[in-house]
Length: 451
Image (tube, rainbow, N blue to C red; front, side, top):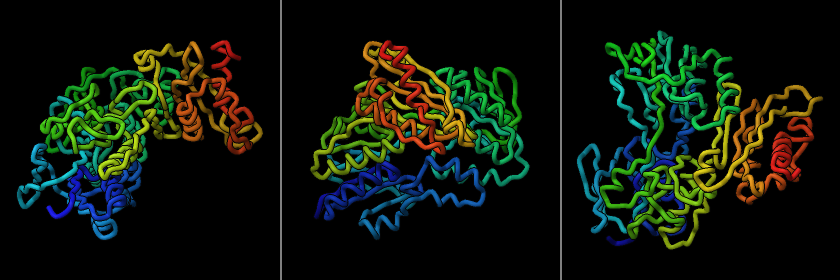
């Protein structure tokens, strides 16, 4: 080869961040991105909201087109191109395209293959009207299917972010929705104080909740008509299967890359894998959990973008460190925002902490200002010294703002006393003089004997 070539496998958040960073730092580097789908660089987290609005094009979620990557950034993006084999010793990848297979040499490699939906052993999984929501292609198919005005009954399987958001979306599109999941916890793993608020919101909007119901499969003719469960059959014109995701590591395993305990690709803090010249980033790779102090499978678009930038910089000789994450997330559930950061109780115990929680309910604005909403804050902290370990919140407004305050406190290794002393902003339209975060911190201080 006449000049150095970087090959990136996967063209969404981590892949395009890595490609862009490497090309910016080393303009004479040849950068080739292989993406097996038709789109790159799109906002996957926006898919449910796009589906909700029939007037919006699915392409609105695309941030930068392959053509713009080629013309403006000099990155050779090849869509509908699936890497099916890696020869790590010779540094060659085999690529399958419509015209056939080809072999492409590389000097450096970034694995950004993402994650994939868990494929449950349900009969009838491939009936028309049964969907996963993982890619923009999936979103386009669901949106097209919803154009059928005869649809009345929808069943959502799974209570994670996709399940919760799609239950909201399908209600907004006029369908009767039933949500099936394995436990009462909404989202999964959340404590009862928060889950009860989420369940009440679902009931308020008419969603039928059936926790503990095991799905057996789907029945229909040319399209789905029923969901078979251990509690009987449910009518269904549309089904969303949202039972979780797993890292997409088949290619990595074939190439001999070492996996971590989480099942994702093991990487160091520079995003280097176990094989020289190969980096990994995004949902296929482990992310360093700052509180647990180890690599974990934490699939997040925000994390993927950060890891991709680090990988892209280090591919061309930088010495950038991925500092780690807290697993922060927030989601919309009808009129609620629900979010968490840091460690939930059981993961905190598994990480060697002795967690205690303080729970409060408050209002989001001053009592004299109209429009205040309820908000619940559950603050998790270490029993011995009050160090903040995490938080879960649910409320009608201001959840993301307050969650981010706690994220910053976690990064700074604050205690609940430090948080209670924080000089937060106050104005009646935005917060009471004692912000709910401060109230929760003060309750935690009293509970721990510091207040």
